[in-house]
Length: 88
Length: 264
Ligand SMILES: Nc1ncnc2c1ncn2[C@@H]1O[C@H](COP(=O)(O)OP(=O)(O)OP(=O)(O)O)[C@@H](O)[C@H]1O
Ligand SMILES: [Mg+2]
Image (cartoon, rainbow over all chains, first blue to last red):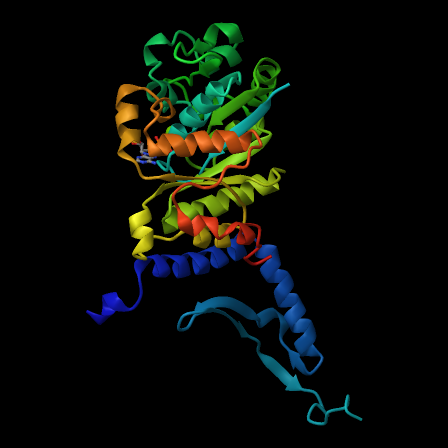
């Protein structure tokens, strides 16, 4: 069956382990998630006005790789973001 | 002044007690003075694995509570010079001893012995904290499966935050044939995720069960492959460079061993 031929179980184990350890290590360091959130917001706030209280960052597995998915509600967009001021 | 080692794992049943008995006996065979300390209070096992269960009079808790002198509780192994066991109490709880008391006890033993080897209980609660309290170095045992390696990672994190530098890894119960056909993680895979130094690879071996049945550590059996692997671990602990046996996949990996893979 193709299901079993996909890859050897040793490889499957290694991949699952890699991902579960990422999640374990992150969840054991909640301050790290918080700091990352703060840093993200600081950067994004330079361009748009965001609602700091409503930000969500979480792990999600879409396909193979785990992904950090951020939901950052935007209150307003600053005037002039469209023009690239660094170029001038 | 000797050195203290704790043998730990997180997950239960991966071979801590087997490793404690065999590494300890192997060190004694190398003319070292060794004491094995069973810190698994309430679930003592090291005595039966060593075949010394009939000679227990006092135990670790008796010593800590002052019912007997430390020397009175030590059981001398008659098969090899310089090997002793300090058994755990069987009818008490892990909380009968504090980390501070364990630290004192191990400190006293280090004055008499070259190696004090502490067999840690499974888990990461008080029993774990007691077992690591007096240890200078830690050996982490894992088997090549996802849950065991995951728990090893957790324990390595705890050891590092407790101030241990460079815990050493033993991968136990490797089946080279399964690794060859791709149905078992190999040593490289495990080292990649755990990112600590390897001190030994022990094959799955029926002689372990036979030797446990008899109460004779496998290192006493010259033809046991697992026994050979444990003797090699003892030599590496003594600072000798010993190549990893029979597992080609380990050999080419020395360069990768120290590679740091992970989040940090
Ligand atoms: N290399 C090996 N080959 C075959 N069997 C093994 C091997 N290592 C350990 N075992 C067996 O696995 C079982 C568990 O081993 P052991 O008691 O040493 O584990 P442990 O980590 O001390 O367990 P616990 O967490 O309960 O204290 C025993 O029956 C032992 O004989
Ligand atoms: Mg045990």
